[in-house]
Each structure stands twice: as C-alpha cells, then as structure tokens.
Length: 145
Image 1 (cartoon, rainbow, N blue to C red):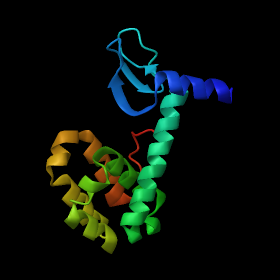
Image 2: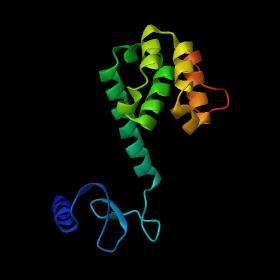
Image 3: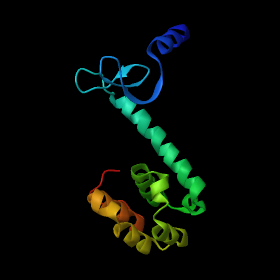
Image 4: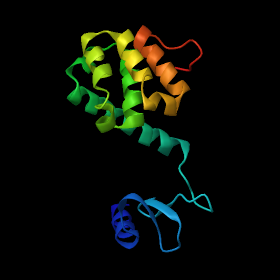
C-alpha cells in the first residue's frame, strides 16, 4: 500500500489547498475531485475527521493565545472554539474588549461586546447562541449538544 500511495502522490501531485485540475474540476489533496459536477465530495467520516482536527487546532490556538482559556468551563470553551473556528484566531484577537472581559471572568460584559460587533450582524443566531453560552455557562435548551 505504501508504494501505491507514493506512486499516486507522484502521479497526481499533492496540494494543501483546493485547485482546479487539468479537467477543470475542483480538486483537493492528492487528486480528490470534490467538484459538484461529478466529483466524489467528502463522506461523513472525512468531514468529521477534518472538523475534529479543526477543533483541536482552535483549542490549541486559544490555549496558546489566552492563558485564561484553560480555566473556562466546558461550555464557555466550546463557545470560544466555535468563535475561533468561524473567525480564525487573528480576527478573534481583534475583539480586545470582549477578550479582556473573558480574562476577568465578566462573561456578561464579554457576551455584550461580542454582540456589539459587525460579526454579530453577519452571523445572526449563531452569535446569539454563543453569547448566551458565554453569559450563562450553559447550552441553550433548544440547541443540540
């Protein structure tokens, strides 16, 4: 199997980012056609694998960037991971007032700062749910968890 993998990588090439192959199909990795027009896409296991890796990455970034993150309860950690997943750590760092309130443990003010942003208007209900989690430390009764 290793020889086959090496050969396919050599023949197909390996790319970290999506690209258009010679047949003009959206392709990722090692020749995986994910184009809507006849591509394989991703199956549920592959989507879950990528998502779990992204969650781990976000958690590491948050732990490294904010010493207070590791002291949060699980619900507030989940909310911050979701925000980091959506914004990326660089854009998240721009929420200086909200992050300062998180560091102080003033979760209501932190939630209010997140709500008072262009991001909140862009993501709507997502922001409402995450800010409720930050403010209360609990999942919304209507959300699935």
